[in-house]
Image (cartoon, rainbow over all chains, first blue to last red; front, top):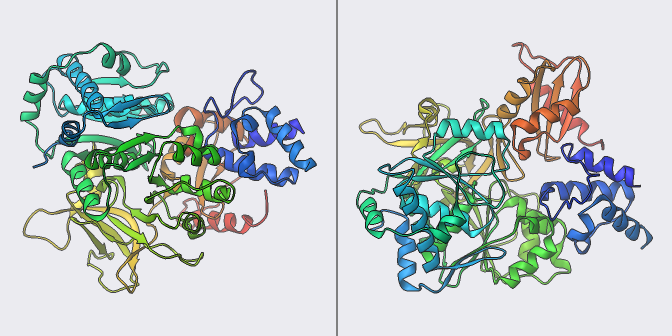
Length: 77
Length: 508
């Protein structure tokens, strides 16, 4: 799943190295609101989940790993 | 008599020196601190790089903090005008602007290294600087209201951004008109969303000074996290929003107020692009007591020239009117022959006259002459109107309804973009033959169609990052062996657009 997440992210932001260690995509201001809207809509389609406003928190989107954890959690619900 | 915007700051400081005026995530400045800090910047400029100079540009490298606003006011105290600049702008584009401006100084309001040589650190001047009131009032003695106040850069169709130069008079006119139409007061707390290099932020800064309210600079990352955003509005008691449509939409699109208690708001004003009625209705349902105002106008007429108070919900397929002119603004709807249209449902170009009309484009005589033209209904004396390039008509009640652009300018996520500027950057890339951009309103994406020997999207992206700010990067790339041409041998945009719309229904 992580590979698919990275490939979706890279599609949206070709300029960002998403696998860089220690980088926080939200807190460091790397992603903007336009990106987050695209990411959520792509994730919803690709993983058959519905990311809600309650899930839209920095800790769920700061890293690809955190996004994976979120998606898995939503898939189980 | 108001000649200079600093009079608003000085009036407030006299009335309530200890009242909070500006706040960001970590700082709060009272009016007294605001004015004193700005005077320190002004003194530093007027005794240093700007000695004996007035009416010259000073670049301010912006951040989302109170120091940025203080730095701008400091430039004004020195008798010069400010040019807000985003430090994350690609170096190539930034250098184009710096070259055209030749500023007397660059003030850095941020904490990060800008990479520009010889910048002055704003925080340090505020900490260590002194105020020379005698010098500053001598500078003010010579001020007139047609002096430039700021320049803001907008996208230029030939690939070079244009600096729109706005005078004190235009901004004074704007806030006086807002004051007449709306009820801002001492307890108005503006929740600033717009970056300071966009003129939407001008309304927060100066309406705040006019009414003696407070401007809360909302951290950028909250606009990615709508729940935290609404909680922030409540924590900071923000009651007035003057936002880009895109910022309002993120709250509505995620149905944030279904689960998060709405903030208490007095005014919700929006501009920048056409507001989808569905998103607005979401806000109106959850915060029915607020006054919702659709604002219209390009940077060249100082923020807005018309407004429409939305007093009832519209059906979701309706278009919100741009409304009627503000006091002291005149809108002329002109047909192709330059005749004024008065009948309803006849489309023409919106042209604007009044004190809000900008001084022109900085150092661009020809571009200024093309857009700021003699009012075609007046011949006996000089009277300028600004041609917006926006097409509109009057509905049966006399409200202005926006139709479309007459050129290739688009509004994408609240940003005004000339597709020509993106194309100029694309066509400067050596390894491709030619490129063309199409905007899909439906998908809200910029498509780049390019012709090259083989697909090279990744390489194009790398090149564009060096030249264009992020909001101008195409969202999708389509490689073609040969781009279609029309009868005149030009790239057939109409065909590309049609094909784009046809393929837009299927998911990529």
